[in-house]
Image (cartoon, rainbow, N blue to C red; front, side, top):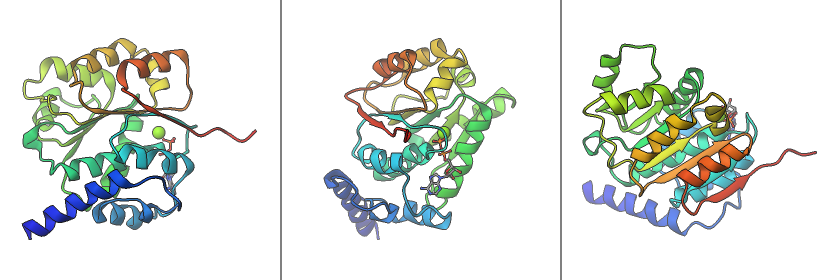
Length: 236
Ligand code: ADP
Ligand code: MG
């Protein structure tokens, strides 16, 4: 069984590395694990949106992404799918520390992302937590050290980085900056810069934003390396 599982994972790695570009619009034609495909299918996700078709396969190859598409275009799956796949390919377990960190501007958005993750990640065995404040800090502290994936708001995250001893970020593989324009509009620029400064340099970063302002570009320059720019423009 172990050998078979290892072969399954190695094959998945190889397929996503060699994949060039989706010719079809179906999730099932992407080089995804059967766990993720089942999670998508069970929740009615069959056909990719345009940003998903352009961004997911590149993220699966490990590329940094600067993604621009308006609200409602399906950006959440553009980062949740690559997170699940990457952690699976690295046999991730919380003993390695945190594997993926998603920063999003508001509690409501964090809840929404967490819900989507819970649904599409159901067949996986990764632990995931919400760090959004409003709860007891020590209760969150207990949880944090046992998570593979965290969905956070910036202020609360920084507080934990300062105060939570067992918060291990050295092995972090993926950072997501979701709704980067709103993060900056809400005045979190310094906070996010401080967070990025403490993260390992060798990581994958996926930055999504509805608009491309100058401050988003500054944040992109600071956080991304050799990024693919993926944009979906509105029809005039
Ligand atoms: P954004 O982050 O770009 O604002 P979301 O990821 O929140 O967009 O998705 C917007 C809505 O579209 C959600 O209700 C989501 O369930 C739905 N959605 C996303 N991708 C798909 C898809 N491939 N097929 C069907 N519905 C989708
Ligand atoms: Mg979104």
